[in-house]
Structures are given as C-alpha cells and as structure tokens.
Length: 366
Image (tube, rainbow, N blue to C red):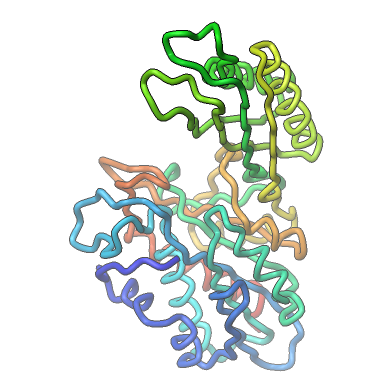
C-alpha cells in the first residue's frame, strides 16, 4: 500500500520518487518484485566479504488521516500512521551517503519492504527468494518510537516485541423473535459471555511473570431490532512470546469458547492463526548497535518489551540481527503509532540517517 503526501523537508522529498529509481541513480544494483513490490539495493565496495542488510518498511495503513496538516495523505482512507514514510526516507538518505563513500569495504544491502502491517511482507520477500539473492552477515531494522525521547536508541538483547496471531469464532445458535427469547438458543448472549470468559486465559492460565494478550476486537451479528440472530461472529488478536504461550492460547481459546457456547445450547467454531513470530534480537547484534549508538552520542534507552508485533522477526529467524527503536517523542500532543492523528516527528530524520551511517561504518569501514 502506498500513501501520497506533500513533502515537508528536502530529505523527506526523496521518498516521492520511486525507490528503485533512486537506488539505481546512487549506483546500487537493484532487484525488484520480491514480495510483489519489494525493492533491494546492493552496493559492493572493495574485496571484503563482510556484509550487512538494513531494512525499512514502506507501507501505509487503512486509516483516514485526522491530523489536518498541509502534508496529510491525499488518499482517502490511507495514511502513514506508523511512520513508514519516514523510515523509507531515512534509509534512502543513508544509502545515498554510503554510495559516495570511498572507505567502505564489503557489501551493503538495503531492503525496502512492503506490507509490514498485518500482511507479512517480510515473509513474502523471503518466500520469493530474498535470502537466496543476498546473504548478509547480519540484518538490522529500525522503527521510530514515540514513547522515548529523541536522541535515544533502544536495542535490547532478546525479546523486543511479541508474536502476533488472529482468531475468528463463529457462535451458531437458534434464532427467534426478539419478543420470544425462550424459543431461541441465543448466540448474542453466548457471544457476550465468551468475550468476558476469554480473559481468563491471561488472568488465570498464564503465570503473572509471563505475558500473553487475548483481545476481542470485532463482534458482528444480527440485522433487526426484534430478531435474535442465528449466528454471531467474534474476532480479535492474540500476543505471546514463547511457543508454549501460543500453544496454550490456541487450546484455551477453543476450550473456553466451545464450553461457554454449549452452556447456552450453542456451538462455537474457533480458528486461530499464528501470523508473526516474536521479534527476538541476537545478543551480539544488539550489543553492536548499542556500542555504535553510544559512541555516536545517543542515549541508550531500556523500555520494556512491547506487545506490538513486527514482521522483521521473519528476517531475524533466518539471519542474526537487531531491531532498533529510535526515540521520536514529540513535545506537546504526541499521538501514538496507528493513531489517525499520528504525524512522524521530522526532527528525528537526521538521527535515523546518522545512526544508519554509523552502523554502516562500524560494519564495513576499513
């Protein structure tokens, strides 16, 4: 998904031109079509076999922008509510600078990935042969993080963001006239109890020292004020950090939904899909980032892991790497990621470019 916005700085305006064309202009070898619209640029310098890959996501979200800003999205129902336009601009600028350097010895890959939001563009790029075409020693991804202050970097060892799943539950009952509820097996009432009962999974089935989330986010059923429907559908999201957590969620989702439904003479069908694995940083790669960032004058932040999810995890399942949060808090109103009022903090563009440049130097400079 793409989103057109009026540029607000010379750096940001880079992203208005096609990514592949800009990389070719800088002197990168360019591959297209991985994950449908993914782009990979490769820069080779000297004879060293050292190599790294840097990844930026570049999709938007199906949200109607409410910032009211002059540079707001011109596409109704689509906006960069997660700052991926800023990520693309930062990596393009770093790539342009790297191409001008004479002190690099090794291979730099820059990955511009589509469809991070829910659809798993990283997985699709891998399935289309990403790591058959390139074989970096390490991979790095970076995301703006409005919770932490500009000038700070978070790159902890181990788990950083949770795994992500979705579920769909269909409760089938027996419809009836709303004035004659005794003739029904009411799926609305059953669904209401299931929504409440699912919270027992996190509250009573998981150790308080572990973290899982089960959130019902959609309820659909019924068409008329005076008709009890035949069926109700629930849907939502799950989060976990360990495979055991995922197994427990799947088992208890089914058990709770089906047993509660049976108590109301209804039936429940449950489908749980594991979408993204947990984002787990390689300790060596994370230490490398922290050392480079501290040496470049960044403060090292230590926020707790997030129950949000990130499909960069698929890349780190294949290659050691590190996911980085770049401090991007705004003074005053500071809408969070995925808010219709979110606006990327342009003041941190140069922070991101500088950090990418320092990581390139640390990995590839002579």
